Length: 82
Image 1 (cartoon, rainbow, N blue to C red):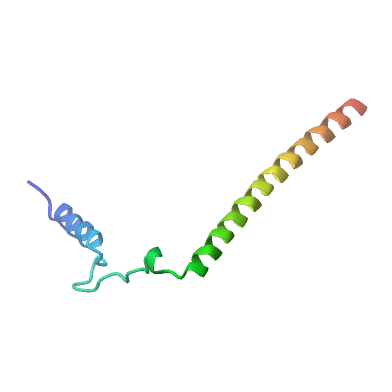
Image 2: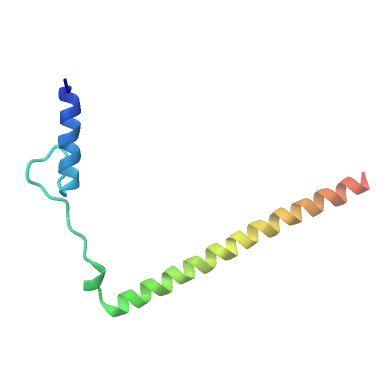
């Protein structure tokens, strides 16, 4: 009572879970280098870059908030003058 399409999708999903690309027979997906094998200098640089990204994202959020506040203040001032 199970369609061939369902079985085919299960087979493709099973290959993907085992690291194989659907539609290929014995090709495995390339393995990535684990972090444990990375160089300490690279790990330190990665941490520094991620920290800088987080800081810049926080500054961007603050800038957006200030821009919104400035627009609201401008609108209030022009509404009072009209």
